[in-house]
Image (cartoon, rainbow, N blue to C red; front, side):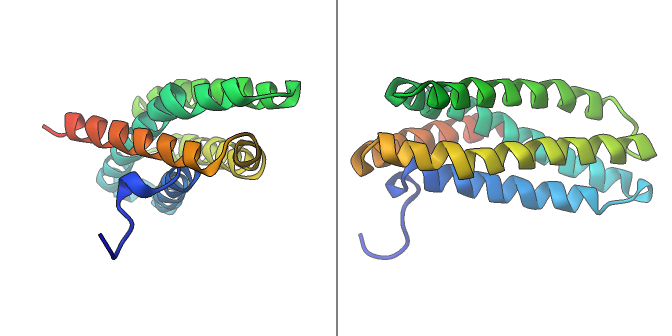
Length: 162
């Protein structure tokens, strides 16, 4: 099968970084909206919520446990626990934004906080956790995990569509 890499052929880190890029772009687009674009804000927020929900669920179910199990040092385990807690904070912030009027200045402020939280989390994973994972796990393991992540993501995404 020559040509483009299939989703299942990507390693876990490549797949997770692609998710990060997609969500960063959506959050930037949301941040650029104004109170007058309430319908656009609601649409973007729904897309962001779906992307984050799928990403965090597959990451917590597949990648994080593999990272935790491979962790050799306390610092590695600390990265795992911190990442789980950062997901939890995002889970607390999202419902608050959804309950806020999209045509309010408060919505814009909450969206900015969500963007900051997600960007901090993604940056930490990409600069600390992922490089450690590459040292702790061999390439075959990361490709296997990538396949599991892709399959879980595909399954969840098709389940979200009505």
